[in-house]
Length: 202
Image 1 (spheres, rainbow, N blue to C red):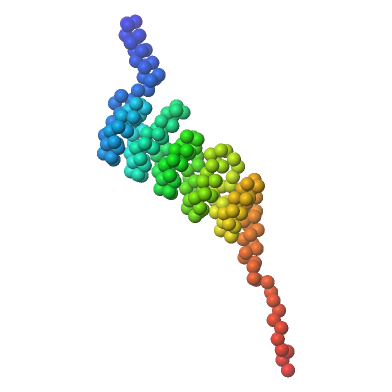
Image 2: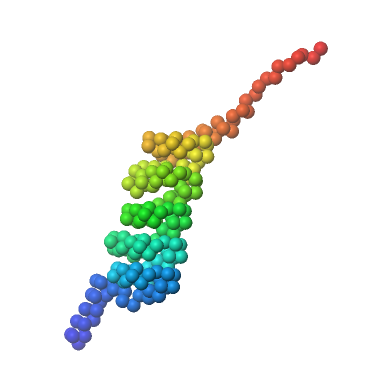
């Protein structure tokens, strides 16, 4: 009885302490074109079935094997399961380079800023401006939300003017006030009453 309990305890410790996924099915990755060498790296990372599903989505989004492996590794370094395929795929679809996606992942902000980063692309900002704003977010510096940046830009401000306001510490609330003021001024432009002087009737 004691031997049986000892063996059971040992099994539980091994399962909880190592979290080995010895029976993970890697065939779905083979079916989406992942190289065997990359799958061996994933086995070494003790990748789970749930993570394989995530990686299949990344491969279907056109993300390279190396980046797939690196994303899993980055998650495991923080003691987490990789579950950010949607965020990474959205970034890739918006034109972000894989190096940028990895930079965001290593900062542990894939899920938190991917939506905002994609919106910055959709606004039509230039690559240097997007990169500047992205770095501010990754470094924890204050910046405007992508929604307010879009609104400021729509009122006629240039990217340089928007960035200047961000550098000055403009908040979303302050941006809202300026947007409303600029929209009001634009709506009233050219609507002033002008008296027309002509000949008096005889």
